[in-house]
Amino acid sequence: MIAAVLKPVSVAALAAALTGCLFSDTVETFGGPTMGSTYSVKYVRGSGMPGAEQVQPEVERILADIDRQMSTYRNDSDIERFNEAPGGTCMAMPEPILTLVRAGDRLSRLSEGSFDLTLEPLLNLWGFGPKARAEKVPSAEELAAVREQFGYQHLSIQGDQLCKDAPVQVDFNSIAAGYAVDRITERLQSLGLTSYLVEATGELKAVGKKPDGSSWRIAIEAPQSGERVAQKILALDGYGVSSSGDYRNYFEENGRRYSHTLDPQTRAPISHKLAAVTVVHAETLQADGLSTLLMVLGPERGYAFAEREGIAAFFVTREGDGFVTRSTPAFDALFAAQGETP
Image 1: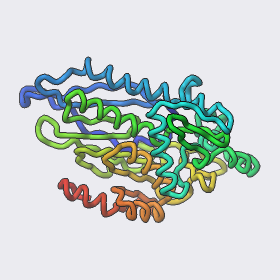
Image 2: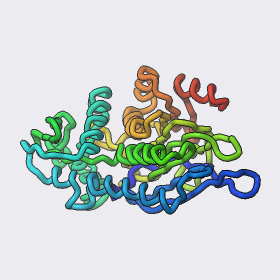
Image 3: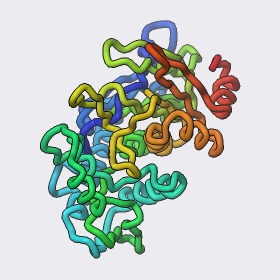
Image 4: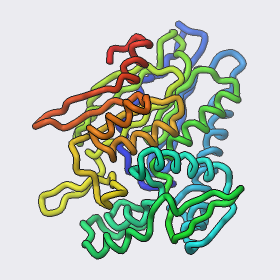
């Protein structure tokens, strides 16, 4: 697996397979384990289209490649070999890794450092990383020491090589699942499939229509740690969706709750009132990274950032004993155009 699943599965598919005599097309469904969680694929199989027994191996080959390249849980992965190398190292990397580093660097620079792919030592220190010893609040001395061990500005790409001028470690947990979804959908398209819903560890993308002509529909869950309750239903066609939240992966110490989402600038878990944020984007990779970024920024700065950048985002903020929701103009326009009520 690539990393522990730190992002809650806040988006759920409502795409039950439609089969039987009413429609000539059927919905094929398959799935399995991946990245410490699961993946699933649903697609409409029309005449002449491949069956699940042909499509599933193609999907699992993509997931296996991503695991071999990007997992921080196996010592022989490409990124772990890079992570174990000292500062001043340049190492040839496969193009998918360079693609994700470029995407992460863009988000880091766009947010002035509120997004960072090199937080693994900090995640470990707080108990949320792949090499964490225990969930605990670090000492001031430990936090001071770890500051020299991360920072996106220490990474650079030179040709086909990934370089670092300090002993930083890369963790793709915040964007790898979204990237996997995009890779899978590209492969499905190349196989001649035109209608499908792909999910990996909670990141989703839907394209086309179901056999009855209706849209693939997904639910945004209410941010609560108990039972899962749909807060909003969205119809999707050609968009990826990612949600981040602070309500499933956390620990408590001395009566205080510490979220798994860390702010690179404070070196601590976020402490604002934003409970969850959902981003809709044509690229699931971007939706995945942006949902993490907006979660770090919080309800005010995050909303201002999303509005300025034209991001379709839905915010859920704690207010007293309940929640209030707010969506960006891009989100409202997107779903109003699709006939959905924001």
